[in-house]
Length: 107
Image 1 (cartoon, rainbow, N blue to C red):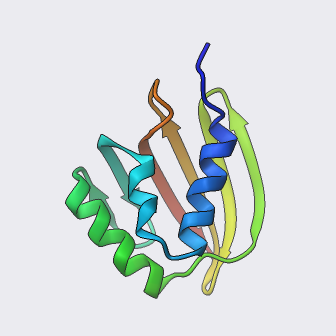
Image 2 (tube, rainbow, N blue to C red):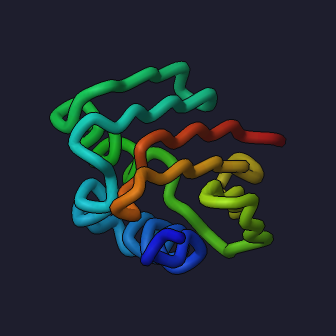
C-alpha cells in the first residue's frame, strides 16, 4: 500500500498552478512526462516541463476547481480556465510524484 494520498498531491498541484508557483515542478518525478492536448505539447524532461509551466501560468491561469476523482493512484481533476474547462489526469509513481500528466480543454 502506498504512503501518499493522490488527492492531496493533486490538490497541491492545483494550488501551485493557481498561485502561479514554479514549485509545481517539484511535484513531478525526474523522468515524468507531461502531455498537453490544449497546446499540443508532449514533454519528457524537467527543463521543458519548467518552461511549459512558466508559459502556462500566463496563458491559461487556473480557476475554480469543479471536480476531483481518484481511480487507484490516478487522479482526474477538472477546473476552469479562461477558455473553458480543463480535464487533467495525473498518474503517480510509488513515491507520490507525478509520473505522467495529460490535460485537454473543453469549450
